[in-house]
Length: 369
Image (cartoon, rainbow, N blue to C red):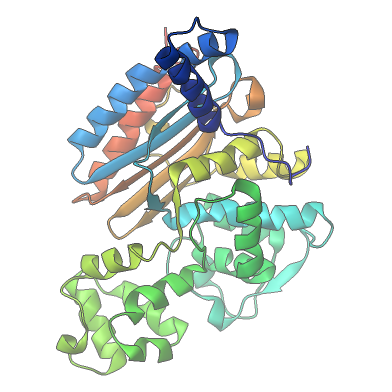
């Protein structure tokens, strides 16, 4: 299907049907077939999953949000995203990969094309590109693999620069409409977050920002930043590192509503955004990630097909993916979950695992009896 054609989201259909049923009830009229469908629009898995998600949210310090959409006979949605944008952290690497693969499908890029690693490309985060010397060459295929499987931030930024930030954001809007804030390079996240503390941050080079990771998160990192700037710690306008990032998160950059991210994954699962080869490559990399063993996947039944991506930043974590992705519109399940305000990452990981168990227990999931 042409990528420019948008499929109505599950949530949109359910809301329209429910509105029709509500109007009929107010009029006291007999139910039409459409209204009868509206009455049955919420399949039996929704209520128990909603109860489970609410319990997970109540048990975890901070806030936990989840959006689940299913294809096939059990089609329907659960939205516990609070109608707002959640910070995505490294899950932005999914739309980045889609934008790159779309260019490959169009013949404007080749997976064999090589990009040269420059000193200015380095950014702190997961992955091994930081261990390579400037001048090393990597194919776009290698960078996609590193970005998705290893969450390599340097590889991701190289890909974003290749397709262009403006192009990336325009394509996301074309794919899903509203819901995403501006997506930036990961290096720009650092400049934007720390830049609010002191104007001198804009003059630091990327390697000075990379060096901050050598300081323990929290007050030691703020002192390291002050040292890099050559100013007293009290010159930085921040009480804590968490406060620095909380201020940044309020900017709306690199954030999205959970339904908007779900629409993106729904269209991937339906084969609407990429060629079969591009879709297959994306999903294979998402199945092979090295960062998701303690989250949703840990709660799913053994052997579950789960193409996923995780993201983690100061006080924020997400896990997104497609369960039974190979089934596509015959029965795949899209899940987008984020946590924030937790005291320790282990608390968020426990919440994701609990969500995985609840998803595995849904009727027709393969994990329920």
